[in-house]
Length: 229
Image (cartoon, rainbow, N blue to C red):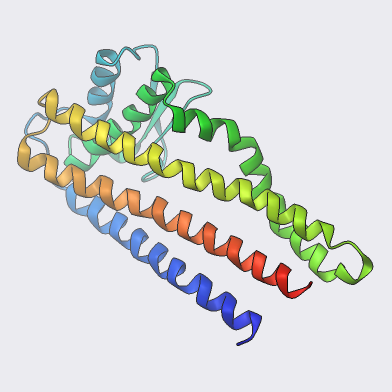
């Protein structure tokens, strides 16, 4: 089988997983965005209460444009909630708001995987930008003794892959925290927690798919590099 055929077989399963994960997130979010919590508390309100209870009351909460654009910015200590989460009392909104709150609490507690991810972020950012251009420049000019660029590209991409791998425990832990907080504080009932959990599980699948894609891309680069020796 040709190198191109092997490339396709490596990438295809991860690509299919990514498409499935994206579809799951959209459909699950749409479903549970239409189901309101009995507590009638909004995403922004639950985030503020949970932050205060967790000792992170100094974190600012902002509304950000878009759908599923929710995130926590550790550099500015700002928790940004999308329009559909900030003012909504849906099961999806509360689950997502609590999840992002979980990241803020991780930051406050200096949760080791999060600290590791923040540490390697600069390398991963450079790697995701420069790895492929350097690799393929090296590939095209390997006959001129510049195949070292291929190796540099691979090592840069290793940093990007490491970032996606360490992201998994960070995201899983934030989701576990979110569900525990919502349950223990009584913001969601037992049946409501099932819906919030499904939303967070679907979101987690996107990170699994991203990691699988990154790992397969790394294997692809290694196979191409090996074929040039």
